[in-house]
Length: 253
Image 1: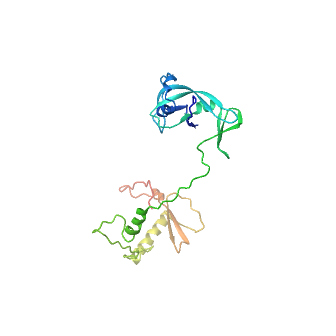
Image 2 (image 1 turned 60 degrees about the vertical axis):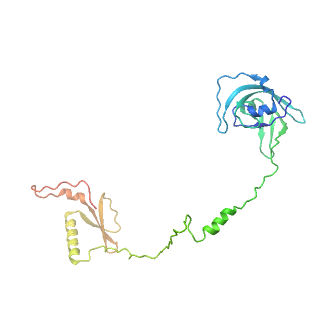
Image 3 (image 1 turned 90 degrees about the horizontal axis):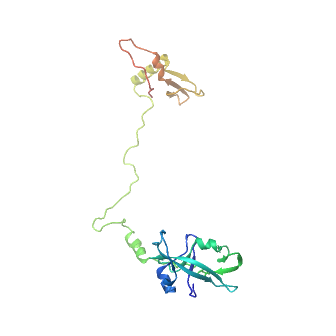
């Protein structure tokens, strides 16, 4: 950059090419002599405060044994920009045809000359393995504090907790399907016979398919026989006019 070596970052996620004021002061102290005015532009970033100052008119040279490549660039100067390199954004990546290759080896090319490969200076040759570090405080806490005492125990206020899986209550009593009292059974059978005579209940076989809405199913003899009921049939019966019965709008089960 104007005969001064500088670090460049090829950023495909950046909209424009820019540089921080602090880094520019290091590599080009006389930068105030190459300024262009800037008017009414705003930039935003998730990592830095983007406050544009001016536009810097400069030249960048990418060195290569087969021939250097010179680029004339207008770089946006940012205030409070802590990045210590020049960020080349999509504006000049597209203009000069800079392509980054990450297939087998990492390099980039400029323009139509695909055989002239430019290498990156900070590409690691091998993946570094971070050595594992034991946390002695954590191991001491787990071994000494969590052995026999629950987490959060306060000395002097220990509580003994005993888990018991034995049932301390009798099993739930199952009610019989029909009343055990002979009188209750007789009354129930009488009511069923009355409903059969009224046509509310009818017997169906175990292979018969019933297509009646809002039905009541009564099963007996080990579920081999059943009855189906439709209480809408009660709408066809009336008591004396002196004691009218309202029509049933909904069935009860």
